[in-house]
Amino acid sequence: RKEVEQDPGPFNVPEGATVAFNCTYSNSASQSFFWYRQDCRKEPKLLMSVYSSGNEDGRFTAQLNRASQYISLLIRDSKLSDSATYLCVGLLNQAGTALIFGKGTTLSVSS
Amino acid sequence: DAMVIQNPRYQVTQFGKPVTLSCSQTLNHNVMYWYQQKSSQAPKLLFHYYDKDFNNEADTPDNFQSRRPNTSFCFLDIRSPGLGDAAMYLCATSAHKAPNQPQHFGDGTRLSIL
Image (cartoon, rainbow over all chains, first blue to last red; front, side, top):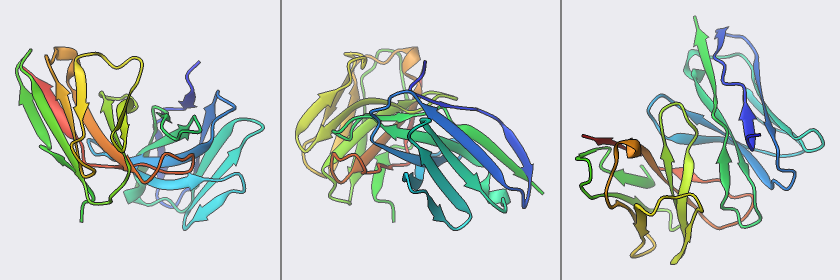
């Protein structure tokens, strides 16, 4: 079983839609989680950290459920510019070095 | 302004010909990482430096080596590139080795092997 798993999609949604991605992780000792965004042929860019209490940044909300070992990302009012691959990322050791990426979920927002 | 800079953006080399990719950072971060990302796959950590302390991932081929002459610069050396080494190579930095430290990536170098 892969350590971080995501539905690869693609998710095709119209502008203005609300879309949610889930990610599961297998290592219960995982320390921290992040969502990164990666555009085609570009580097991953940090979108947001994920906290157990949930955190929100504008149209984006991230949630961590340690009991069920999943992470979610909710995007409200989707924009065309949100089209990208969203990578779920876990930090799996106390040393803070084992940054494990999921394979990503592709989102395509159309007008 | 870019804070993690990778050069070149595109690198073409011949099968078996050594190649060096470079990364520099203006963040004064302690930790620098090298990842390999192949098409449609997640980035895979090759190794990292914590200051001058080098840490190799167990499954990183011996063909891949790294140097960090100072805080700002880190190099990835591929001694004898094979066709399977064609990929995007990403450099990243983080301030510390701590569980809540995100990593900041450079633009990447896309390596092609002829």
